[in-house]
Image (cartoon, rainbow, N blue to C red):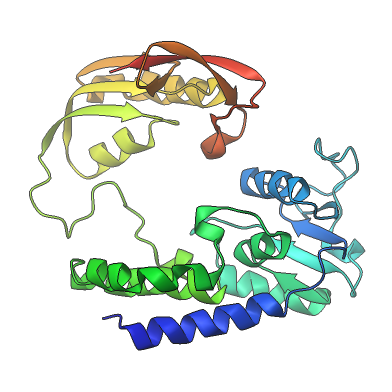
Length: 280
């Protein structure tokens, strides 16, 4: 169970970590040319960071659309480089990957440290001391969490306050229908706002539930195409289905949208795409 003393120790450690970060003037490379890596690139550059390009051995030689330059392999990386690891997927062994990367560069930053380094003003990248006024709330929430998830909750706060990035690998592989939450109905009417590629419906079927009705809204056209492909293969497993390439909001309108980013696609005031938005 969390307590104030432990949280304050983590905050002190995180502030020390933040103070030790390199100067923002120092050029850096991003390891990983995935959706999260490209999104991280845009955020860092907008905050004034000098990002030289991407390193990804699986995609080396390809031209990164964001920089117009080839993606490098690890072998091409200089040992005095500042490298930002951009993996944000619990399926990857992050600690093992970090152990491989550290000897190949002068310093390795995880995504949270990189956002601190660039001074990005994001909720989950807020500097550790900003959480000090909220310690009582953090502890109050921990008391309401079942014991099986206590370690994950503590791990998230450990990472967020210290700047580490390790709790991701302890996340449950089935977050939508966890077995330790009682009374989730077996038969569901599911309104899926941001249906992606059908991941929630897929998890529902895997967990043995029956989808009587599934209303799936997905404004990103690439995601919607994947959603339709999955739907065509599993139509016989589903009840009534309505799938629409639209966002969901407070009113029927047209919104600006940043698309083509897989799970990171989002409504954005400066998005160059226009998408319909419907009210439930």
